Length: 467
Ligand SMILES: Nc1nc2c(ncn2[C@@H]2O[C@H](COP(=O)(O)OP(=O)(O)OP(=O)(O)O)[C@@H](O)[C@H]2O)c(=O)[nH]1
Image: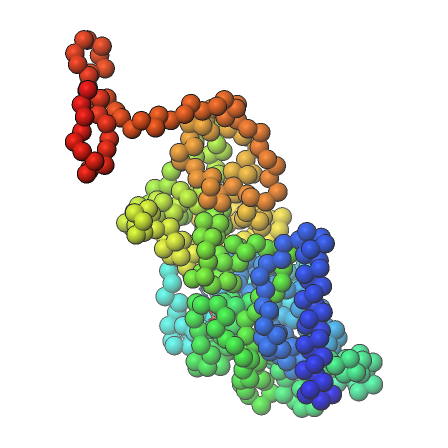
C-alpha cells in the first residue's frame, strides 16, 4: 500500500480504538489510566514490532506484572504467528535471590519466556567494575532461570531465540497461510525473512531501563539514559553484528483499567515533576516499603499507630511527609511543611531503589519479610490503610484524634465510599461563636478582685477601653 493509504489507515484505526476505549470507560464505569495518545509514538511501536523477530519486553524486576503488557504479545502474534516475546526482567540487582526464585517459578508456571538482567551491573562489568552498590543482590547462579545474565550471555540468548523464530518461519515456507494473511491485512513478517540477520526489538514502559540495556549491549553509550520517563522519542536501529540487529522503541504507556494513576507516578511511569496529588502517590510508597525501612533510610521516627488501630498498618502519607519535612527543615513559603518537595524526593528514592521494595508473584508470601520492602498486594492505592481497617476505631477515639488526621486532603477514598451517617455530636446545633472579640484578663478565682475585659480594636480606631 502507498504511504498515504497507510497513513490514513493508521489514523482511522487509532481513532476507532480510542473511541472504543472511551466507550468502555463510559459504559462500564471503568477508570482508564492516562496512556500514550500520540499516534507517532504508537507508530514507532508498530514499526518495531513489524521488523522484529523476537520482541523483548523490558520490565522492572520490582513489579514485573505491572509493566508487562500481554495484549502486546498477542498483537505481535497476530502480525506473525512465529514472533515471540521475551520478558527481560531488568533491575534484577534490586531483587534478593529468593525473590528471583519465586518469580522464576511463576513465569515457568505461566509459560512466560523470561531472563533476569541488570543493565546497571552489565554496564559496570563493561567498565571493569563490579557493581558498587552494597545492596546489590546479584549472586552467582548456574541455574539459567534464576541467574542474572551477563552482556555476552544475553546477546547469545537473544540471537539464538531470534534465529529459532526465523528458522521456523523459513521452514513454514512462503506458502505459510499466516504470513500471507498478515501481509494482506497490512501486517508484516520481519526483515529477517530475506536474510540471515535477525532483528530483536526492545519495547516497554518509560523508565524501565531500555536505553540502559541497549547501551550495555552495544557496549558504548548510544541512547540517552535518564531518570525522566519518556526520553526516547524515536526508535533506533543498532547493528551488533552481521547476524544481529537491535531496535529500541520509545517507552510508551499502555492503557490500563487496573493500575491507578498514583501507582504510575510511584512506578516512574508518569513524571514526578508534573504530579499534583503528591499524598496519594506517597501513599503507594508508604504501603509498599515497611515502616522500619523508611525510618532507617531517612533516619526519622514516624508516629506510631494509635492504640485502637492495627499496629501493623502502614504509615499515612501525611505522617510520612510531615516527619520527613520536620527532619529536613522543608518549609514552604506559606510556613507549612513543604510536602511537595518531600514527596518528590521520596518518590525519586523509591524509583531509584534507595527505598528498597519489591512485589511478590500473586499468591506467594515472603520468607525474608524482615529484610526489605515487600508486598504481594497490588491493590489500588486509593484504598488507604484506613479504608481497609475493619477494626473501626470507636467514635470517641476518632474525635480525639481528628487533629492528627487530614481528611480534607485525599487521605480517604473519595470514590465509591458511602456517605457516612452524621456523627451524633454534629446533630446538635453548635453554639454561635461570640462575635464580640473580647477577652478577660486575670482573675478567674472569683475572689472579689477586679476583672479587666479587653476589647480588640483596629490600631487607629482609638485607644483601648477598659471596664
Ligand atoms: N538499579 C538499577 N537501575 C537501573 C537499571 N537499568 C536502568 N536503571 C535506571 O533506571 C532509570 C531509567 O533508565 P533508562 O535506560 O533511561 O530507561 P528507558 O526505559 O530507556 O526510559 P525511556 O527513555 O523513558 O524510554 C535510570 O535512572 C537508570 O539508571 C538496572 O539494571 N538497575
